[in-house]
Length: 173
Length: 173
DNA sequence: TCCCGATATTTTAGGTTTCAAATATCGGAG
DNA sequence: CTCCGATATTTGAAACCTAAAATATCGGGA
Image (cartoon, protein in one colour):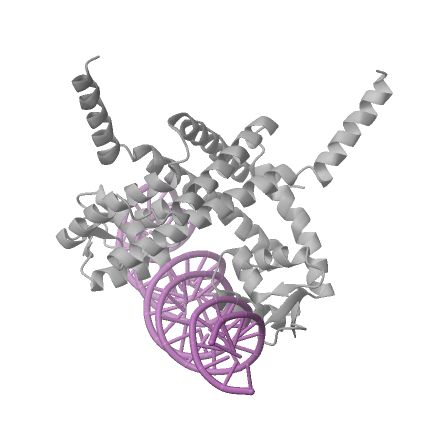
């Protein structure tokens, strides 16, 4: 192959990648979204029907479960990947229900520690068991090896996205 | 191996699966969620900053794009995997912005067809291009083969979840 | 000490989302 | 034709969520 031909081919490949070549990524992303919407709606429904519980509240409790002494609102919002204001309202409602309590941080008068109440902890134990079983059923079509593969690919994808964000390249054409 | 030993082993395997054996599914699910939250927040931000557009509106427009004559609210809500009421409000606002229009269905007086306006279509074209490029960058750490593998695994996982839902077994322990 | 950028939280406004109940229409069984 | 279960949409209430601005506090340098 001549150098010119090679260059033309490169150019075409590049152009192709830039015009329609994003299809694979788009399709992958859409498929991931539709799968997660499906699973999420099931979990949401079960939490509501069996425990009168919402997913965000469950999520917050899951974060608190391993922190005996609780954690600050800020740490909660980072772990849950939601905004601060969101957590403020969520905790507000959950304090009202007796699931968590709030107390001032010892050293920092700006911060507050949130932790599960005994009631909240007890309820979470039961929900967590059920939650695990629901997931086991929903994922039962995947064997050990397939789950491992998917874990690895998701880890790689997450790194990829993090890198892109860090490089500030999400806006590049 | 004696029959007794075999039975004990089975019992242990079963017990293990029922007590701690759901860890793999839970971890996989959490990883998928955190990845999708990361990607979603980036797309949300770019849509807002570059196009003053929200993700739900973009999503709705994407559904309408390939339906020249539009589609009913009901079909929209199914494709978007959200409730009817949600779509009602979304369309309401978007009509006000001139992005979509509504007209009665020819044969069915209960239904309405929603479709992109020329303005909406034109805006969507630009956004879709950018959206594809953002995804390409975010997923750039995955090669062709890895994306194919992930597509296949997600397809399998989705089937698995659909089956579980159809069998009504999400509540089984 | 005083100041100032950083951090923790709340507040405000608006949009999104769900569920459940209500309304309107369809389409077929009798 | 009439009735009735199914379907399409809307409405209302409550929760969730975000972005941006406001408030309070921290902690270190001048």
